[in-house]
Figure 1 (cartoon, helix red, strand yellow):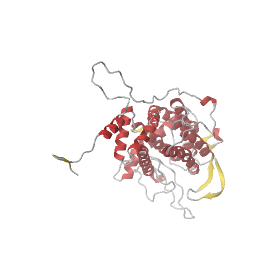
Figure 2 (cartoon, rainbow, N blue to C red):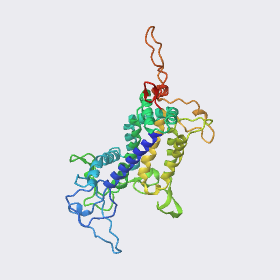
Figure 3 (cartoon, one colour):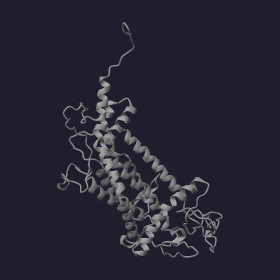
Length: 417
């Protein structure tokens, strides 16, 4: 399907852009610079040596074993410079600061631990995205509703991609379907990056005061040790999860061997739980299907990806901090609830050949109005005949093309051969 190919292309471009922003906004930890300008600012989510802070002493460049000595992690807003990386980091900085200020503010003003602060931050962010995400769900469900007609268009213009696209756009225009809402699906993916930076480095930083300032005003009262030490400024312990740290990589089931390439040493319990929620959300996003009706190739591909893509999370679960998994889990639960209220159970059932009673004939609380073909109205007496509006513009164009006779050049004595 042309639309699916375009969405995949947009998804790949968005992912590459997100990776570029991520790489531009962070550097590997534990790599102190040989010389640091005290007046220079670090890119959000980057590490800076103690020499970047007035009054701090310079850490030794190497340990007796030859490995670099750890340096305090100092986070400061990025400044625009001539190189593209600094520009990307500068553009990325407001989003990073917004997430950091919101989470630290909830932690300080409400007095909850970091785990609950991440949960409340996620709820605030997802609530602000409700109108956009509903628009995305409505657009996807309406596009899914005209999938049979799209397949007919593909069969009719099997060898002409230009006519396929033209007829598809005409169908969308006739039914009032907008594809702009589908691009909103990339927004939650892009928001994972600032939250990763906030958890992975904001909670490990020994000095993040400058990142809590907007136009020189510190919005959250927080005091960090000066000069910075190796101890983080914020305690990321989560008591209700057994005392694990939100910035750490804990909750792993160790494996007897290390899986190469991904360097996987264990399976994260948080990754397993998040994968299960993703499977539910993916199946609910698909349209309902009658088991007695065979699926076409595109539908089978969509349902296969809905099962296998969430499983990839297990492979990189040991490199994602616990706090990021808390954000992903709460965000996915929020998404499932919104899908349940908007589009219902979708293709969640039948599951293993069974459909529970509560899912039979379920009606969503805020259903999506599926557009239908225009209906015909009675023609007033004496009015000229009008084309049948029950036939779509695509059918009328195809019928007109079929009735046009292709003529060659003709002379006075008949048609030339």
